[in-house]
Length: 243
Image 1 (cartoon, helix red, strand yellow):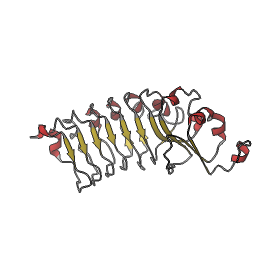
Image 2 (cartoon, one colour; image 1 turned 180 degrees about the vertical axis):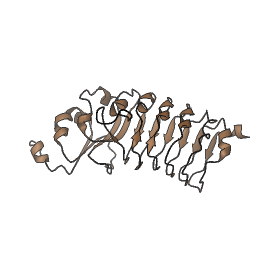
Image 3 (tube, helix red, strand yellow; image 1 turned 180 degrees about the horizontal axis):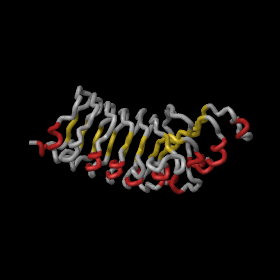
């Protein structure tokens, strides 16, 4: 019976635990668990789900992911938006077929281990809208933490929405940027709300615009929307700006 189950949906229910019988559903390809008060994922639940391609854990209360998640080698879409996860284990990097990773509204996310993102060679979409995780470069973080360079080397990536402390972290070479069909970069010293917009290529600068004028020429030539917030020195930095 369990082998005949291909899709399972427990959307917006009252599940406090993931049903254990799911571990025996070897042909299960889609699992929707969003909106349940789940706070823990059993370590063994993923070991038998070799065919799983879509996993939605959004808007649950989970705080961590088991290392066994790395066994989901067929996974294409992983939605962790609105969860309470505080770290992304390096085993996630073993999901070499993953296409979409949604980490939006992960307000507790503080740690992504080094060499996690760089191994996601098939990743096409990374959405970290409203996430508290800020991307930095080598030398700005410890050796055990992920860096922005890992994202820039992902050749399949075509949509990226992240928070970065400074535009100076991005390379002046625009080759990686031209690969992206869409992006939303929020440059700020602190996490905050992303601008809601339908534009496909957005640069959002909060505060000091010095680095924007120095390093942002290539990016601004590609962007379709520039949002400046709390840029009190704008008049000095952009003296030729027309009204």
